[in-house]
Amino acid sequence: MTKALPEQHVELMQAVALGDRNAFEQLYRQTSPRLFAVALRLLRRQSWAEEVLHESFISVWNRAASYDPNLSSPLTWLTHIVRNKAIDWLRGAGGRAGQTEEEWLDDLGASTEEPVSQLLLGEEAGKLAECLNHLNVEQRQSIVLAYYQGMSHGEVSAHLQQPLGTIKSWIRRALDHLKNCVGL
Image (cartoon, rainbow, N blue to C red; front, side, top):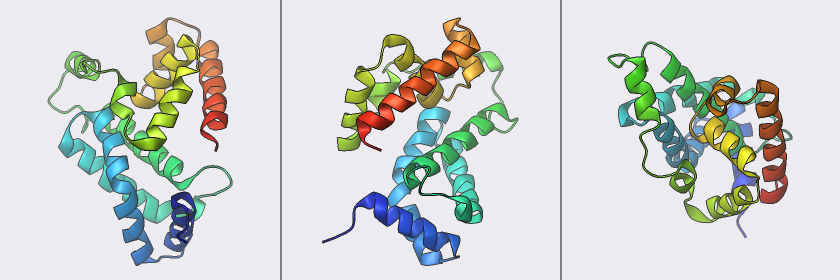
């Protein structure tokens, strides 16, 4: 019987931390399509998403020893790296080169589909969608803006016109609910 994918990812992360190039290649092959989708969803440009994915995996190689399987699954850890790199890219000069801030903000909100519906692919995503539907509107909106649109807590606060502490509470409660609902 084969091991569950999260267990296999933990073993690969541990091997990468020891400098195992084959494990790194396996980890890349198994996770890069999903991580590329995260970067593309945030950046909306294939070339930028490719660059961010490349930078992210360089960070993974260099920081694999800092991964703690007791804190999160490998895919969660990898997704946070990609998300943070994408946000840094958008905020940096390279990310918005040739684009005014107004054009960038227009592009960010230009999607005709809801971010949640873009994400829903596969069985795990279906479970996540079900769990998201159990959140109240404010929590769901906060999660979508923070994690699928790549906004900071401060940006979510300004967008929803709510105090920053309230946004942080909504997000924390929503994450706790999602963790329990998904079964992590």
